[in-house]
Every structure is written in structure tokens, then in C-alpha cells.
Image 1 (cartoon, each protein chain N blue to C red):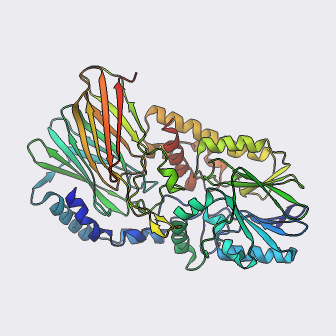
Image 2: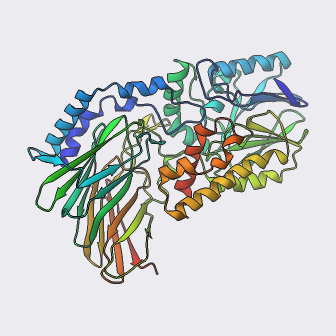
Amino acid sequence: MTQVAPGIYMRRGVDEDASASNDDAIANIGFIVGGEAVAVTDAGGSLNDGRRLRASIRRVTQLPIRYVLMSHVHPDHVFGAGAFSADHPTFVGHAALPGALASRWEYYRARTEAILGRDTVGPLVMPAMLVKDHAQIDLGGRVLELTAHGIAHTDCDLSAFDRQSATLIAADLIFVRRAPSLDGSLRGWLKELAMLKGAPAKRAVPGHGPTSVNWPEGSQDLERYLQVLQRDTRAAIKKGVEIDAAARTVGLSERNRWVLFDDYNGHNVLQAFKELEWE
Amino acid sequence: MGVTRSLLPALMLGSLAALAPPRVQGVDDSAALMKQHAAEDAAERAARWKSLQQAVFGARQMQDGSAVIQIEAPEHALDAALVPVTLTLTPGTAVKGVYLVIDNNPSPVASHFTFGPRADPRVLKLRVRVNQYTYIHAIAEGADGKLYVSQQFVKTSGGCSAPVGPDNLQALKDVGLMKLHLLGAFQAGKPLQAQLMIRHPNFNGMQMDQATRVFTPPRFIRTIDASYDGAAVFHLDSDISLSTDPVITFGFVPDKQGTMKLVVRDSDNALFNHSFDVPAG
């Protein structure tokens, strides 16, 4: 674990896809220690990932784990939630998260367990505290400001801002070095990113890549990638390029700038194409 | 489509277990997952097609269609829930309709186009779901009733059970919205390609809602009728294999400035009507 700011501990995820050998520990996950309680953000990609995070917390503090933030619906961020059930925390998510979990969880579970093995992702945990627009949680003299974003990386992105250290826990609203994955709205993501850049943060914690980047400079690579994706996809649509052909040609100027680019860019183009062809 | 529906129970077997694209963030489509779909051998595939042919077309003879109809689809589609297919008819053969059959899908007859007097049937494009490694067959039915068949193999899987969107309710928000793009300049009497886009989740009954623990009930487009100033362009019988938010490219011959009318009916008997000026106003 790295202490990215006083009381904020993050574990860097590996720049890989889920595999039996990495326990789906691929996202940046961690916790924030307040005067009276701990908040987890996020819980990790498998039960084992979550359990290890819990053990790390106990090496730092014995304060109760009162909140577990669920930044969005993707497996690498929520499948560790079950490791915290015994602590009876309040699970917190975007107001759209329950619907997204309902329609996707079983599909994700089956696919992830096919790789990690049986009973590795734990029970489906639904958030009890739903955030629509804004909310605050108090860890005892340490307030986290939560924002439920418009459709961006997904349709249920939740970020947290720690006032005390001016740290933005952006989760997958920010990718650094590891290829971004678009599962919401390209235009929406650019819009939310523009708003986040105005946050009074000194640093941000991306969902993938280094555990801390200077802010807003740390948003530059992602913003450039999304803009290239938007520009090139629009051009392909205008030229009448077929969607599958576009997925193989759009965005290639970004190829050497991202780890796992070939695994994600084509799908990002498909998403972008489906969105932008309705413009 | 009575024939198609009766095939469904027998062919549903095993399809729910299919696990693959579209890509889940952080979950690789490992080789092990894909191998199960490759297992079916050539003889089994030939037998499957033979029984499908029998079920859909009865005893009617089929001829090699390579000189009449070409089928084009990516061999390895990136997204199994969105596989673009192009059907090209060679000019010279009068054709009254085209079938698209995805052999290994739970309901294999994906589309049946019947052309009207205003059609230019030379190029059709659509996007389909592919559940597992499969042959796709395109069958052209000549005006004389003869059947011509072409085929292509597609290596992709999981397109039928993949979630439609993050949220099922969201997917129904704009249902029935349509757009029509003319893909060329209007000239009276000259064939013109058009791209029809329809907002419709095309739920196929294979996506699970975890909150209710049941599969989201099927709701899909059954028919599309396109007509130009009252004369038919095409009638399409479609099925659960069309992708979410179907996009269909077709040709027509506008004899003069007029109106393209689209009538879409889905399996809940919802009816969506849209008319578009040609050329666009």
C-alpha cells in the first residue's frame, strides 16, 4: 500500500486483465482513515482481493470500517465487496448502480468465475446508501464529498473528494497509462472530465495506473485519447466506414501511449460509434 | 416465422452457458473459453445446416449461390452482440427475397427480406448477434422460386446472453425512435441507398435481471415495412438475432421526390411509424 496523502492508502492494480494468478487485483483500491472510522474505496476485484485489502487496513488501524464505496458496476471494483460484509459497513453507490448490478452482475460473475474459479467473487452486494447528485460522509473530522456523475465511463460513476488533503478519488473516471475502457458515453465522459478538472484537488487517484497523479495535469492523457476517439469516430461515420472496420482503424495514433491498447481500443470505438452515429 | 419459433426449444440447449464478448473490463476472453465453441466439427455443422434447411425450406432444392449472393461478415467480430453482415446480390438475377440464417443461434432465421416494386435489392447491411462459432447462410429466392445459397463461418460467441446496456429500463427509454440517412444524392429514377436506425433494445429473453432473478422477457422487432409513396420497398420478418438498436442499410428506387414510410412492429405488438422526406427536407 502507498500512502498517497495523510490517511489515504492505495494499492496499485497490475496493468493486466483478470487471471487466476492475479485474483483480478487489477484496479487501484484502498481506504481512507478518519478520526473515528474508515472508508474503503474500492473493495477490489475478487473476494481474495477484498480480504487482502481488509488485512491491510487492520495493519494500519483498528477503527471500524463504516463505509465501502462502490465507484461503479465493473467487476474489478465491486467483486471484493463481500469481504467486508462482516463489518456491516454502509455500502455506497451511484443511484443507478443497483439497476446496473441487477442487469449485469450474473453475466460478470459467470465470466469472472470461469477465469478465477468457483466462489471467488462473493455474494452480490447492493449499495444501501444511494447518491443522486451529491452527498457527504463523515469519518470523524474528515468529510468525503461524493459526486454521482452523469453517464461517463459507465452510467453509475461515483467519485469522492477528500477536503482535508484535497485529494480526488476518481476511480475509473481517470485512467493513466492503462488503456481506458468506455462503457457509458464518450461525450458524457468528456463533459464530466471537464468538470472534474475544475475540482479544487491537488492530486487525483486514478482507477488504473499510478495511485496518484497531480491534478488537473493527470487528466491530460485521458482527455486527449477521448478526443481522438471522438474526432476519428465522427470522421469514420461521416465517410460511411462500417462500424467493425472503424473499430480496427480509429484511434491508432494513441496505440503506443497505452498498455493493453489492442485489448480495449476496438471496443471503445464500437461504443463511441453506436453513440455518435445517432448525432 | 412459425417454423423458426418451433425450432427454438431444441436449439436453446447450451446457449445460455455461452460466455464471451462484448468485453468485460478486466476480464479477458481466454482461449479456454473460446475452445468449447470450436469443438463442433465439420460433420456436425453440415448436419445442423441440413436439418435447418429442411425445417425452413422443406424439400426445396438449393443451388450454389456464389454467382448470385455474396455474404460478408468479419471472421472474428470484436463484439458478438454486434456483428455487421453485408449481403450483396449480383445484378442479373431477379430476386424476390433474401433469408439470413445464423445456424447456431437459438433462433436461427435472423431475417427474411421480401422485396417490393420500389426495392433496389443489390446491397443489404444489418447487424446481428452471434451466440457461438457458426456458419451464416444467405439464401436468395429468385423470382422463379429457385433458391441460391452462400455461406460464411464466423468465429465469435456470447452475443445473445450479453447484457443489452447498463440498465434495462434505460434501454427502453427512446424505444421506436428512428433515423433515416440517405447515403447518396437523390436523383429521380436512380437507385439510392439508405440507412435506417431504430432505437429498440431487441431483448431476446437471454439477459438476466439479477434484482428479480429472472431473465428479462423477450421484446424484439418482428416486422419492418418500408414503402415509398405507398409502393413497397421491402417487408422484413426479423427475430431475436438483430442487435440492440438495429441499423439496416437497403436500396430503393425513388421515381420522384416523395416519402419513405417505415412501420415497425415488435413482439409486444407495439407499432412505430415514421415518415421521411426524400430527399431530406
